[in-house]
Image (cartoon, rainbow, N blue to C red; front, side):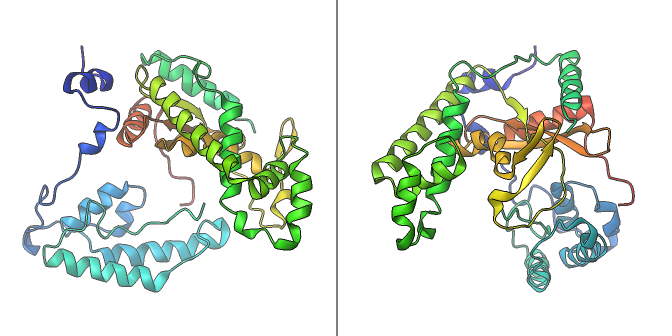
Length: 329
């Protein structure tokens, strides 16, 4: 029988989070190759490769960080006007950092496994059939899947705690002239975002402490679940990709679903559980809707075991298939 994650942790006596002991050591791949023995590659060959593969090519001097960054910037110029995927582009800073990375590599200085790789940073309908097909494929491949929420997890409570703490983080936006009005709104708790925000902004500090304590209880509940399970699968969102909406105020934005319109902020629901409990989560592609829009599944792993959901996503890719470049790109 093959080694399992839980079996390994039990054998060596590690607590959850032992995966963090795995690292890529400096010098694990030689960077001392001479130009005559290095096979260079074109930037276009890395379009849809992983960040680790791009980093490996840079370390092996098959391509420079500057060369790759310039190429990525050209692709952004070509495609971003229609995609609007990059909101803030720091072109000069990216090129400067790339040149610095190349100079450091030439001197044998190691920054880490992704040295020199250009990256983007997150500035924070018809899907049921796709998800069901993916789940069925995993079952046929031998995955042991259980349906439903863990018995010790209370989704509604965790979601409300998440919304309270998220709202509290922006309490400094409350103006003195709004306090009385906001306190009145806080007295009418109806489950809406507005009501939760009003309470989070005006309630005594003990309410924040209670929510923080509830957050730790949620983490403990998930840790108990992961003693017997490797990962938890859930949707990433209740809709596939949708047109950008930058209208203000945000509370008036709406998303179309087969069941009718829903508030824009409802998108927070599925991402709230990993965020609240500090759990690692990986979003992996599982197919396309009838309209050709990508559908992903969220793979949540044990606390501090970032490598676990990534590994599950990789194994999922072996069964269902991984990322496929869209036509025209």
